[in-house]
Length: 186
Image (cartoon, rainbow, N blue to C red; front, side, top):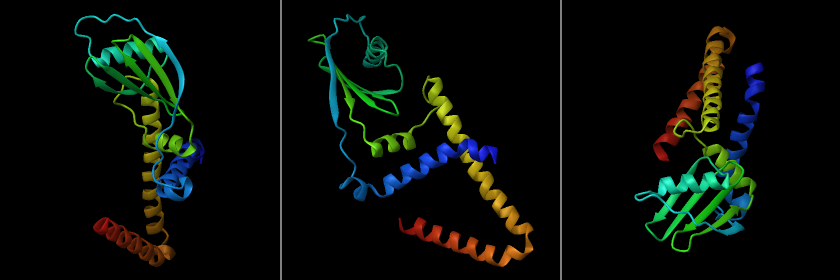
């Protein structure tokens, strides 16, 4: 019971985010919404880089200077433009650095509940150096473990309670059959 109460926010988030992904068209009126960004700030950024500093090093320094350290991805056109997407659960920042002009443009994605839920659903950890990403991944592992325990304990209870074996066998066969049909046709 205590484990279920502790894991309830994750189960609720996965349920809501899965509903959003399965019913995207009715909820948004179309397919996946294109992210809309609004300008937060433009500023000069007269940084001189060490010879051979690559886009990763530049992105890390820019994010550190902006106080936006964390999970990110980059798109780089050597010598022309560096675009950094700082992927936080609540908001995504798009930082564009133009080295020739020594200029930064900082934009923030407008909040959309559907995009927020999908980011939480797809968020992963253990592959970054950020402790909170690892903590998120650990919490997801706990949810998975609890769900496996729930399924295994259900099988055990079904087998131990003799009166439930007939209906339980029918439910198990129907579930396996439907799963096989989906697996074969999707």
